[in-house]
Length: 157
Image (cartoon, rainbow, N blue to C red):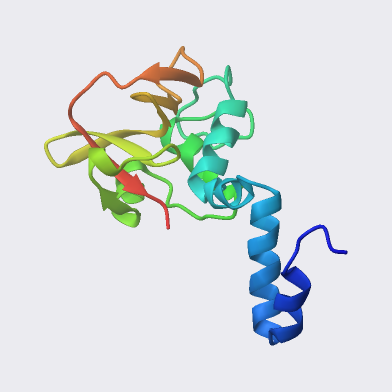
């Protein structure tokens, strides 16, 4: 007797495509949370982990890793490690992303600091109103609270 009554009847009546669907449904019943975890592995979430792994790396103007970074160098490096290409500067990165509202932001989205229409800094949103970024000369990659209301958000596609 099967440990899952009705599965064998379902499988015997199903076509090839339905067998795959039934197997997926069965797996998600047996392993709750499996599909939620798989969908949570977005490029942004993966890039966020890369950026966090660079904590303590010193700021250097124009540097894009692997041991020194400026702000857009850190985002470029982090997304490149997960197979996504970004332009070099913060402003060009903003122009390349899908712009989203603050209410739609998710961990792994890019946070662009601006003065008027001029984007001057970028970090990766970590949740709880914080970003991973490489802030300035004499500082290093760190997690920090978003300090300004003059920010825009972008999602890497």
